[in-house]
Image 1: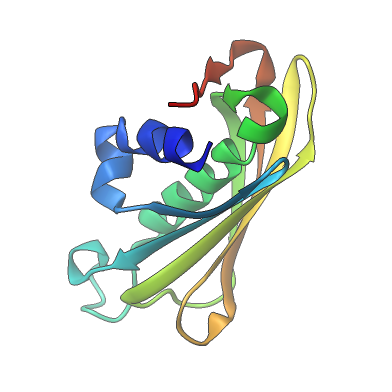
Image 2 (image 1 turned 90 degrees about the horizontal axis):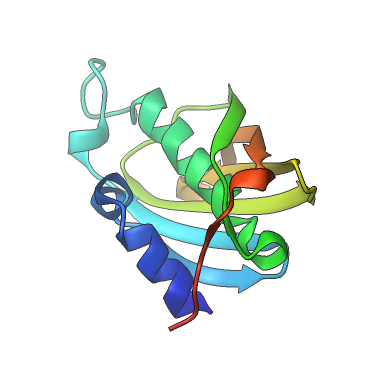
Length: 138
């Protein structure tokens, strides 16, 4: 199933540009890895990854955490992100976890960390479970 989820992630041009690799997948969680580059940094120079990219990474992880219970991904209805510390270029790990599956809406959350493994940002999202796009195993 990891191959099918990786293919689903890679099928979106933006997700593919983010360079996400599925490292682990369970019934209610997913762990993704990527490498933040200078291209992702904001106007403060090379030191800080833009918050929009951080939010996007958290959104993807939350969304794909639904695959194990819903059989696919669902559109994001709402996503709240909390930035806890600066995210710097380098290796990034994002873990998404299902909080509550549902027929109409589902709740999932994600946590992002980089250098030193410290949590740099978290997010919680509501997803339209009634509009699932299936992830089909290869």
